[in-house]
Amino acid sequence: MALDGFSDRTMSRNAMRAELLDAETELRLAYAWRDQRDEKALHRLITAYMRLAISMAAKFRRYGAPMNDLIQEASLGLMKAADKFDPDRGVRFSTYAVWWIKASIQDYVMRNWSMVRTGSTSSQKSLFFNMKRVQARLEREAAAAGVVLEGHELRARIAVEVGVPLHDVEMMEGRLSGSDFSLNATQSSEEEGREWIEALEDDGIQAAERVEASHDTATLRQWLLGALSALSERERFIVRERKLREEPRTLESLGDELGLSKERVRQLEAAAFGKMRRTLESRSREVLNFL
Image (tube, rainbow, N blue to C red; front, top):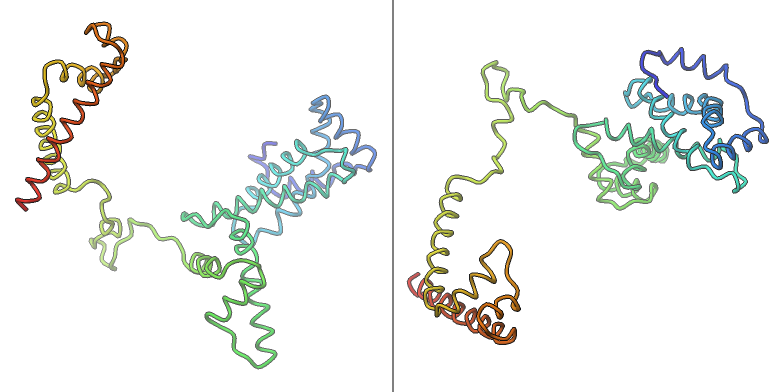
């Protein structure tokens, strides 16, 4: 349902003029969509309950999102509900749709609250939408009893009330109390001051690490060439064909070419690897003794 170009007032007026479905008509439309994929029935069902979607969207205006966007998300939740609704369960569609509409709006609000992802688990979502309300109630109750409730004790009580771990409360409190700043903002009031983005550490490979990695790769290559040179010509051939080709050859194909059995080629390969391992171990011991 495209909402571009329509004001929330226009959508609200259109929704209020939509028909009210009785239980029998609602059930018939739900069966028509589920069993026959009747798009007219789906459209009629969704149109009739857009007033419900708009009403729920209005409850989330305090989070700063445009009303048109909230209604768009509410309508998406309504359509998901219509698509998944099972009329055989004996539940009214409006009851079932409420959960999907609310979930869709909440996901949108949390996605757009901050550039930093606020959270997606059920406990984080419950905290995001309930923490301020629960905190205000706990503070009022404490004040009425002549007690000042703050800090760790307040967060602990919020965790108990909402039913989430304490560390989730601490994390969400930090995210909700902060705000987003541009990395292109200057660190001082001067226009020519350094931008915050210049203070970020470069997570790419540093020059020293690149030189060190290049040196280690060259050293390892020389060691491997030395270990290969210690093998016989036939052993080098087997190692090269089995491990250094883009598409390694099978023991059977090598056996056919060398006039050997598959088992004999496997034995020669194992012996060659054993020689190379001993050569490389001796080189590593030399380096350790040198250090």
